[in-house]
Length: 267
Image (cartoon, rainbow, N blue to C red):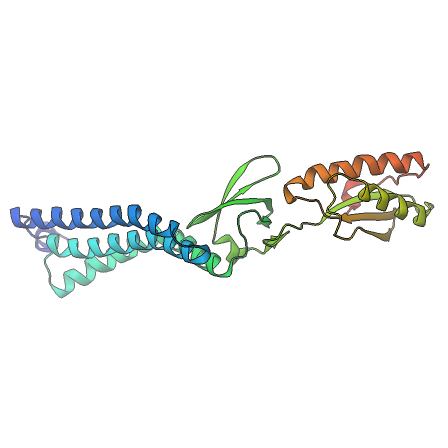
């Protein structure tokens, strides 16, 4: 494209056009500013999903305002012929699409997450291999705090790409599993009774929930799984540690032999 064709594409910006540009930008900024200030206040007066839906409007409004403002600004700088407008708006739309596709995808997934609620604050979930407690649900991300006290901002779009494993699903009950690998010669009845007593005497046990011991024979010996529920899901690691330490000591006291298992063979 030569210089004349390029000059034909753009309009001369006079004082009136400059005033229009400033007016459009100011109005767009004012709408975004008011939505960010007023909608959170309105959301605080609402509850549950209504509150989250109201908060979800903030980035949606910002996105719509930006797109509308750009569409209004283009004719001010581009000669409004059909050919020019199609080319300019097409290029603008393509650029916007590539620039915000991930943003929009996470935003839509956030709205879906608000509606379906696969996780809530206080839930312990696994998403894309990351396990942690949901501490905050934003409009584009959900924040998890891992057992190592690391905060992970997980995009909502992950719920479309990976399974969400929810350990307590909005409730106070979360099952903890402690495993013991013993030789096949061990007295199964004695081991089961000993492990049940270990769980029943734990200070972290939720007593109205069942305590279960399952047994599976493996090529290397016998796998015992002690399943129980802590009073508070946040105590799960203290609970598992308590069961593991006291369970191991009790089995040693009973002269129970532990199996030698290679890590790669344990599923």
